Image 1 (tube, rainbow, N blue to C red):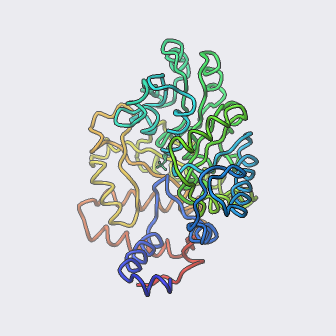
Image 2: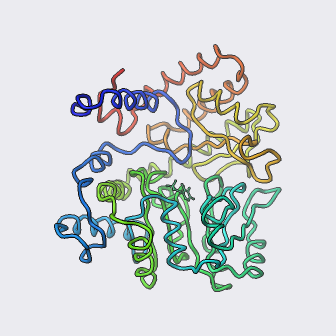
Length: 420
Ligand SMILES: *Cc1c(COP(=O)(O)O)cnc(C)c1O
């Protein structure tokens, strides 16, 4: 970071501190990951200097000879990897991507049906503080109170009575697989579009570690920075006949110029995701989550749905006698970074709920396997037995640091010298 060092030492210091933090801790936030050095190089390139409103071959600016080629390459990679006919790789992030889909396919006041936020759904799936419940009529489905699984019979009944124009599958805190075929069948029966928001699980889908929505979905949205291990960004994939409406919703309806540096970095991530090594990665993420879940169950933790078959585990802390918010803070002091989260039918308030959400994408990117997950489960449990004991938490943090440093963090250990 020679140039930055000269220009802005204050910023360098903060970036270095964050870098060290990402290196020395066990990052269990399931939506986070490490991108490769290659992804960061593309993102930190001269492409950030360009304006290119429009799409390849249909720009409002001259000087697009290389950008047109670049964006076309990324579109082709996206279509091939996700088995869809059309790809828009310009959305700035996941939330704007979802907004663009609604803008393209719905009129204000039309009905959206998505999973309620406290049951695992995302804000943009019709939760009341989001634009998606303000501009549209939101109907929310929930999980079964006993099994914590999506109840597809309830889903069908709700769809029949509410007649949504779009049904959304996808979540930020659902530890089990989605039955995309069931969603697709229900959507077709009631004449709704079916949108699969695979932001959390895109990397698993690519790796064959989660069923593929492509045969069933009209539209797929995904962020590119979670299990997919790309830069912060998003994509919309859809059937050919929706392509024009989707493209016009992204630009000019909702966005201006695309972030070409991000587009290029998404392309790099897609190339990485098309390799056999990435397939192994996605499979290992799920094996690791299962191993971590098994360890936690043995240690008396209550897991929502009883376990996981994805990258994500949602823990109900009620029986442990620790407030989740307090637990998450203690874990952070012990070098284990995660977040507090609502659980289905949570008796507590969203700002201090009953759950802790963890996941294995980041630690798996560092090359950790099931044995390390067992160890993480033990450290996690010990930290929660000692939430008031700062010395004990510091001892765990030292052990965590030693463990973390034995596993190279992509994009950090292969790119920059880690300073003070
Ligand atoms: C992360 C996520 C989003 C939003 O992505 P942002 O980039 O944070 O706007 C949308 N939907 C789901 C299911 C997500 O997990």
